[in-house]
Length: 150
Figure: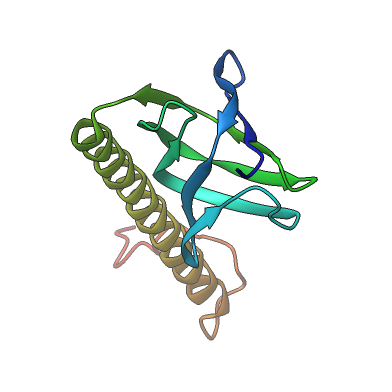
């Protein structure tokens, strides 16, 4: 029998998981899905919004939905995950739905940020064009009065 992993999953406000009987863990980072067994080499990776899966000493599968985080494997048997938010549960379908919603919300936030960045960029370009226009001193002047009557 192989030695068990010690799994710890924490958020800034709570310890979600603290188990000494984990036989296998599965997670995913930007490069794809990977597994961790006892004796794994040291590892540090960033996790996107995803579901971490592990099998405990009871032989049952357990799950934790994460809103991004960092996973660290040390000494071949200690796995620590630090995340902003997480939800532990045994209903994989529900947790995967939560993760999809988190990913959609993050994609929407990224899209809005890009739109705002483009808007600001266009504003700066317009200001530069106005400043660099031939015959312009860079100052904004009121329009000249036409045919002023004496």
